Amino acid sequence: LEVEEQETPAAIYDFAVHAMARNDLVNEALEIWDEYQSKSMSKSFLYQQKNNRYKPNTFHLSAILHCLARSKQPSKAEELLLGMFDDPSRTVEPNVFCVTSVLDGWSRCGKGQKAQDLLDVCVNKYGLQPTIACFNAVLSAWSRDQAYDAQKKAAIFFSRIPIPKDAVTWSSYLQACRRNPDEMERILWQAHQEGEPVNVFCFNIVLNAWAKQSHVDHAENFLKRWIKFIQTYSDSLPKHLWPDLSTFNTILTGFAKKGETQRTKYWLDEMQQMGIAPNYISYNSWIDSLAIAGKAAEAQAEWEKLYESMDYKGNFYACTSVLSAWANYARQTQETDGIIETALKFVDGMEKKQVKPTIVTYNALLKVISACEEPELAEKLLKQMESGLIPTEKADVVSYSCVINAFAKVGMAERAHEINKRLVANTKPNTTTFNALIHAYSRSSDPDRAEKAEAILDEMKTAGVDCDLLTYCTILTCWYKIKHVDKATRARLQLENMMKNYSALARKHRNSEELLRNAQTMVITACAHSSPDSGNGHETLEIATKTYREVQNPNHVTYAAYILALKILEQDPQKRDRCISEVFLRYCKEGSEIEDLVRKRLEEATSPSLFQELLDTGTELQMQKKLA
Image 1 (cartoon, rainbow, N blue to C red):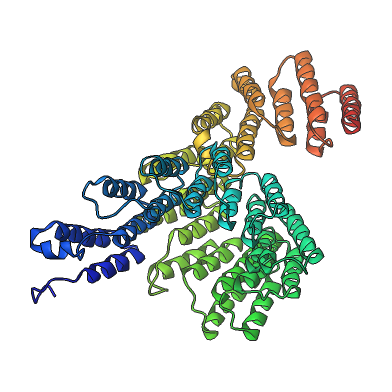
Image 2 (image 1 turned 30 degrees about the vertical axis):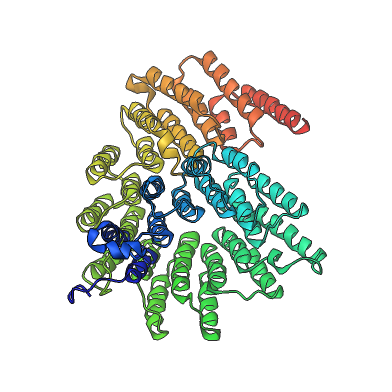
């Protein structure tokens, strides 16, 4: 049309804007929108303007807003929306349809307050009457908001919705309460009893909340109550309340991650008895459970059976699980004979079954080789991957990490360092690869391994890679194992560096408190293994005492380490006995049973009479605690 110098019909713009928007081509959609706007304002198109042929309307505006929302540009979408609404010569009247598109953008970005503020503006300034879709979008934004008070604000907003709620409203509200599955469950059952329109999706959100918090046992109990409820009232309950495929895949995945093969198999059979056909995710979970449990032969046999019996679409993922099973078997049993040959044969057999190996497959194979502690073979496979073993894919960061781990397991730190340098040259490293390298030094016999491990922190900084809690913990492992005159001071310094950034680092780990306690315990252990003849025994004891007092929830290893430190470093016999007694009695008050390690350290550090006296007193304290 442009070549023939003919006018482009307005309908062409309509379709073009929507085509771009539906394919998330934001820039292209905006270019068409700008051209459309310019034509609507051009005098040469006066006739078309009078006939509304080139006037932007709700159809065009909503397409652009939807496109911006999907690309997570809600600020730009809101600016465009309010600009059109405030334009005196506007061709688009304020409407909830366009508003909902922008609210969806704020929802995708998890900005609850921004979404709520926009809705308030549209109600108070333009007099719009929000639909349930508007309220749902704001509630969804609050459910994704990471602010500490997001759940509270979501509850307030939910309670003020003036029109009847639908299933999406309830599911968004439940999602906002995901940090408190107990509360979610209470809300869900109460809503059902009051006749609210909850559905299977709402039940699945509660189930998923339990599973994601690693409380798969609670998730199972919830599902059992749900099924019992369904079976009791099956004649009167609509089908949209019955468990579905997603329900069972959630519980299967939860048990698979824990390697609980019996319970995974139980729920796989249960879903079939309820008339729900498993899909490849269901079967992959079953094979995953076998893999994590290290039952490699069973995992491979199951894969073979599934492949022969059905069009098993998930076979590529399951192949990776079978290889992981062999790696886990080698780690758990320390039996490595024939495992690498079996894994290689399995990969070769994949192509015969028309399952093409990918980079993920070969990375899983590298993990098998690493678990069998054959680093030279792992490096040989890595070189093949670097040179194009897979035509479309080169070795990635996971490939290099596997080989670094292989050398780390046998304490060959310098070879691991060489692999890491190749990694930095060929692709972008990450925190995991550097942690593996530090771990290699912790396993080596190099007398300077602690200083070399610390030097890796500078390499991480140069590569633009952040440390995490594991980074510091692994460096501390190096310090407490070596003989060094300043090991206690240097270990304490690393702990203090870790504490400076603890708040930010803790968000990356679910077990951040445990990692912190481990780090503190390693500093105390480093003090305990310092020589009292080095001339700084008093300073070292102060470091151990200061660190011990900072531990929030000490475990038996922490207590044992500090008792050992007092035994070695405290020179005053009376003070030593008094301090050890206080530490041990505190342990008895807070602990459950007296662990063998604590008993051993106590016996080594005290006289036979004091040892027996403390043991009797500690046992009595624990009995009193049980009775209470």
